[in-house]
Image 1 (cartoon, rainbow, N blue to C red):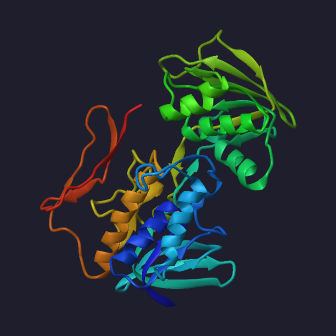
Image 2: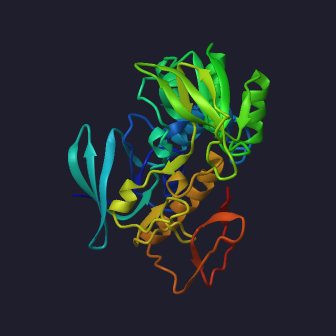
Image 3: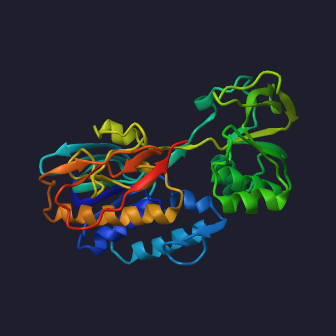
Length: 366
């Protein structure tokens, strides 16, 4: 069993920011576990600009933002293990035990004084909303399409309907158009778009792609390949309105229907999960209900901007470093509460005797 001060699970922007922050706050033994063959996480396939405006004060592409942090990380002396996955985290005498599977090193264990969960999030799929119809090729999430186009060099379809107006769906509507595909429409079940206003303007309006609000897909048609979808209007009860159906021929249905914090590992190690965020409940230091186990980034709650996830992760890295150096739980805490019009508040608990201001993250109700 290898012993170290801090283990960071994940290799995306949150994980790198937390690791750099911990090192800058005096922690020498930091190990990063990343299941992919490169650092950067989802940023590696996000070749569009719009990153870094808040944190770096300039507009960067996803790979450029990741490269900034990869360089910062390389200066810290932190050990990076690629093609490596954390299978389990459990309390151990004087710290935490992390069971790890590595492509190169096989199965082994790490013992750490503290750990940070930064696994990010994943996309909701067709199964999450139960669209009736057959199971043909051509039903794909926006993130998977983004990887196919930007990293693998494949165009997943030529006539596309996008369901959901989250930012990645809007960005991929533009990307598919630039690659020569025809985006028939972006359908959104809500009466408003879930994406940033700048993406609505730059990705849809600039390319004359129609955004159809209060509209959803009620059936998928096709045997071996998608041949079309039936769309219908949605009422105030979120149910399709009979008589409003419209058939739209297409060969691809791209889903952009939300993100879910990646928390199978968190649940396995007994962390309390917040039902509103889908991520671990944390205190103002980003520590979970398991002593010495911290969490940050999209694994806690889905952020609009990577810059905000970075700021949160810098805090997690600093507080994890404090824990390694001997800081322990607050004597008394108070719980935060989401009021009217607010869906959740992070952190869920704060120090009753706090001497510093605490930044709260929240999301509106839908």
